[in-house]
Image (cartoon, rainbow, N blue to C red):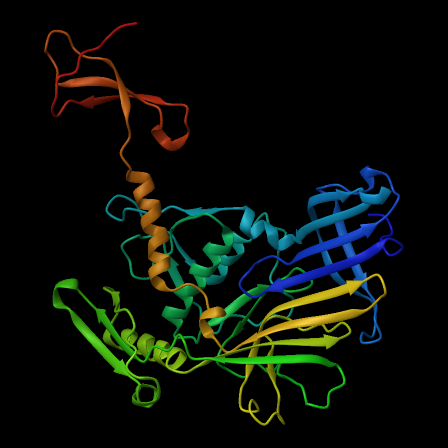
Length: 409
């Protein structure tokens, strides 16, 4: 696009940990012709600031929205869009399940499935990204415990549920994936020191504002989980006596997973209890200048009297630049694992069920012909939704009940 520096009024770039794409909004004051800015155009913004050693590409994306303000004879353009991560929420993904009585199920490693899902998105796995700790193989057998098959509205959902299965069968701690500032796919593990902790001290001149909040309104300290065959009603029950003493008895909704073992259910309930029986800390941190801090980075405030023992995770990042070249970076911080974790096994099963229901859903049709002499119990029916193509198909079906009469036109 044309040089926007001479016309830049404001730009805001926002990245959230639970969203595949980075969004941007730009306000320009310019006398240029309308065709200089349009949806579908590529916007690349390189930032320079004394807090950076060199120029940095803050965003490279596609303009998706365009609005104009002609008030007082001014021409003010408002542009909005997202980076290449947008395709992960624009494209769906489907992997058919297999009836193992008639067909052979396919098997894939988690990394193989991830590469397949990323096809046609322009996104590649980040350079230097560590491989997953274990090689986990999943199957398209819809009845198997280690299944991965179904239909997802977005590739983002498909990736979330792929990693949900990996977490379960690898025994890994929960972790989160994201698209970095270079547009590459990366992941990190939660509840561990990832070697990327950033420290801020109270006398740090970069800090404009730090607003922490402690919230105990969502406390849950009594968990029960049912596992194994439904008729057995076998369960695990875990509580936190410390949390109950402080906040009272706060039971959670029971969890049911029929294909869990006792050990798996115990591990899951313990993880839920550890996360939800204590208050959640959230904070906003505003800094002077431009700071390249990826979502997922851990942050600590070592000499803060009240929060020195808290390790925060960056859950969103935004950059604000105005026409006076005043740059600020805003960070959203949280200790809430549910805000930065991926979908669970139940949600993964839901996608499989959705695909199975869609494949087996009842179809309505129009009877086009029936035997007139009673020689057969079959009739021809035209199904408009046969195969999901919308083009329709005629099938010979058996009349199991009812009296059909063909009415000619």
